[in-house]
Amino acid sequence: MINLAKGRYFALMDQGDFSYPDRLSKQVDALEESLDLDLLSTRAIKISMEGEPLGYLPSLLSHAEITSAPWKGFCMPHPTWMGRLQWFKKNHYAEPAPYLCEDQELLLRTFEESNFSCLEEVCLAYRVREGIGFSVLLKIRYHQLCMQ
Image 1 (cartoon, rainbow, N blue to C red):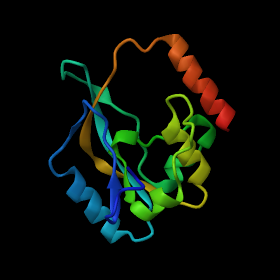
Image 2: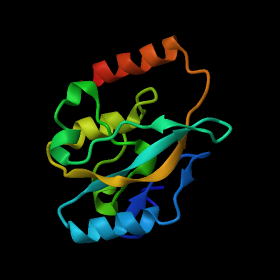
Image 3: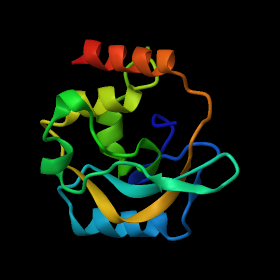
Image 4: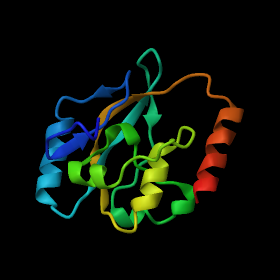
């Protein structure tokens, strides 16, 4: 989709999640105000498969906070991302994508030359998949360590 996109910005969202009505306009406004900003996320609330609130996804606000410990991963909820299309076209996702951590690979590869931020407001409800076992989490962490 990145290669087909024609606008100034590119936004992501996962199937089953709920974007708040003003999410995109708030992100566009923030990107318009900060011309040096490449990628912007928002805070997100976790919800169950039935839509019950479960808490918040971890997120940090400034580039310095987000990138302070890259070996631990980046707290930038992937389905809330919006960035400049030129940044996405310059920094494609890895092919083949690492196992369930393509967002972390992209951030790890680009954080030193990019500028990331996160809106303080919650603008997305993230549906938590049930049944992710320890073996899946271990496999994800293994692939993250290999990338590093």
